[in-house]
Length: 488
Image (cartoon, rainbow, N blue to C red; front, side, top):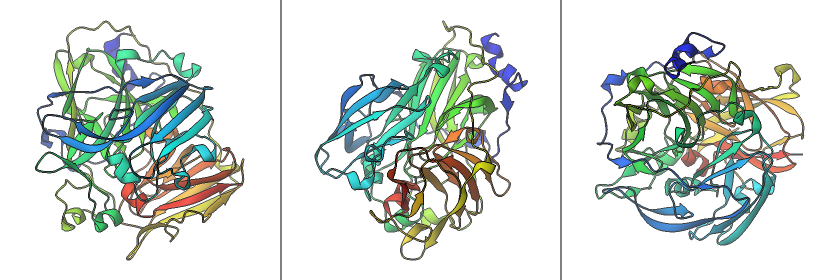
């Protein structure tokens, strides 16, 4: 298979599932306006491969570009934090050193670890060291880590504390996917910039209760308006929506097609070609993009505009609350790829089958739970009518049981729901939206739009103990949209 034929062959259905975009954009790509000159070189985070290491959080004054500054926090003196990369089966010893002057604890988002290792808010430390020890006993995938203290998670992530956690295994290595310089991690985050170039985090009470804190400038790997020089070949992009509240409808300029090969919990059974992909906060996407057809040129990674279904009560709400930032669903240009004219890349042949994946059957479920997402006057968004309390058990499940969880969004804003201690399969959603490419694989975070019911199935094989589940709009989470899950 010639490299130029890669995406063309996918589209012809050579054993690979094809899926058309499901969103109806309210503007065409040509109507999105470029933001900035893409004059900042894309930073690539360093990597940690040792099995015993320190992860130290400390305050810092960070110059992100000539005109943008962040008075924030850093893991190991970098923003984003270093990428932790290990193979399945590794035993890790991690010393989290907290020197930021606030309570904090680290959650390993997507990893299934013992409860005392998971970053429950009750395990926060105000200073000193928290020792983690756990085994990576799950499939290869793009995971991440970030703080998880109650009421201030949003602030700490916004001010710089987040990083990738990549697990590899033999099944993935056998595919010989693009690696090295051809594998690029991209964490996308929006930030609000003051007139003096300072990144600010000052959500109002209405923003905490309703929309979340939406920025006006996009950072990719901590850089505003970045560019990356590439060859006219095939690249693997590991993409993380690390924003507090903003949803992105990812696409490439001129509807250049790309292929989704993985999601939150690792590789999909089969690759899916698309030209746009909705990603909510906390979600990850593993994609292949063939740049051989744009040699000696440029292409931009963008976020196409989109409508929030049944969101009439939300659209326009942000500016009514005094925010100057673009509303949810606004268009952005994210970064630019500058494509050269030659490549030294080997030919890559995408297999018909990416991974052997066995999802639980709906008939095997021991019970169905309904998780109601609602807006309570004067308090904000709730789960089953309640705000978070540290020691109250909200849902108790039997270890080894399989359950269907129905997330019912009765509010007028989106909720990306994240469940600790499991990976789940999305079964279906109400309405006409249907499932998107990433929802054909294992997930730990799912977007539930206003008025939707999304059904998921999950097996609770994690160790017994207390975990949480919550909305990954971090302002919603900090305002109490979180609940305790106990495995017994």
